[in-house]
Length: 251
Ligand SMILES: NC(=O)c1ccc[n+]([C@@H]2O[C@H](COP(=O)([O-])OP(=O)(O)OC[C@H]3O[C@@H](n4cnc5c(N)ncnc54)[C@H](OP(=O)(O)O)[C@@H]3O)[C@@H](O)[C@H]2O)c1
Image (cartoon, rainbow, N blue to C red; front, side):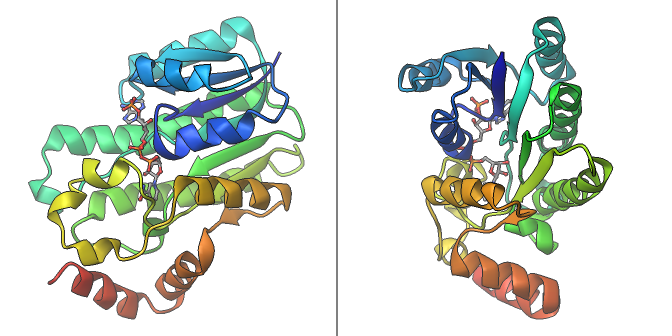
């Protein structure tokens, strides 16, 4: 049985990847998130049979549930997409500590766990798609913990690619800037100055670009010229990029 596993499938970018993977001729798409009703509705709109796995991946019991299913069914995993994640605006010490713990747990620990539990079941030619962020390229005031989790994801992708060298498994880091999904209001983005979100792209643009970059064998996927300029600036002129970010915050 050839499958894809998509975390964060119930909305946004993860949902977009489920649509894109629908044309890959898979036997099943395993969708993982907490909102089963959203995944059921998505499943009804796809041609590929889907398995709904209702799990809270910020809890080790949620991660273990997925591990048990993989180990008992032993599917051939052609794609893993780790899209489950969230962010929170605010100075690091102002964010409630349980939220900070969940953010690190979901964005970092669960992503590593899910990736590593899948690798033994991935043949040559299969793909790991990690949803990172342009925020991985610069420590961001008022979004510090989140951007640090994404810097972790970026570093993990770079190391994993080397570890997998010779096995024929691709690792794609997908690092968009702002994407118009539930992420923005969920992060408290409705109380930050609107200038922060002066440029957004759609999840369809992110997913289409990522699938194209995957086919071309690229290591990283950036969506559109704005995100490319942003990441280039963060990499080459971090002080200037910091000033621009802090001005957009009104500080
Ligand atoms: N939108 C942006 O501006 C942006 C930019 C760069 C990177 N990203 C990254 O893109 C990824 C997807 O975000 P999105 O924009 O698509 O936002 P989204 O629409 O809010 O999607 C987040 C997904 O993560 C799942 N999720 C959240 N907490 C979870 C938990 N504890 N256990 C399991 N699943 C959980 C959600 O499902 P349930 O609530 O049903 O569990 C949902 O499916 C995230 O990693 C985010 O950091 C987003």
